[in-house]
Length: 115
Image (cartoon, rainbow, N blue to C red; front, top):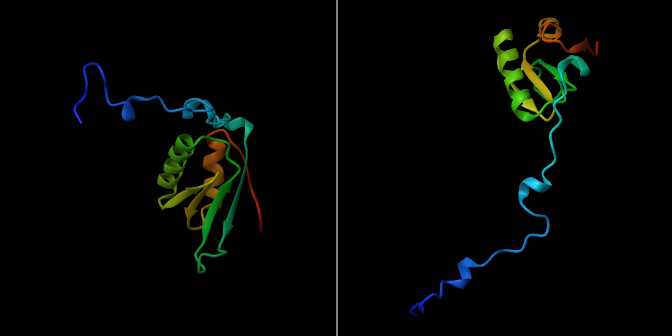
């Protein structure tokens, strides 16, 4: 069917109704507290890892970008791999004392947790 003069394809030119506005309007802001206001717990765990040790630092209140860059620097300092899951950083191996000193050096209030 030929387009008439001044008549555009109305199927693609219509405005879609959005009840809540653009997606940015409903997005929740991610908190990003300064290091001195965060209480971090460091522990070594083997549960669910087939006997392999992992050092877990939990309790961070950062957005994903900041937490990722912090994890990268901690992994490099410990010389091992790791990952970020939710609000925790997991470093492969038993690095609790070293991780504790690195976090305190960066300004976090950190403690070793567990036995």
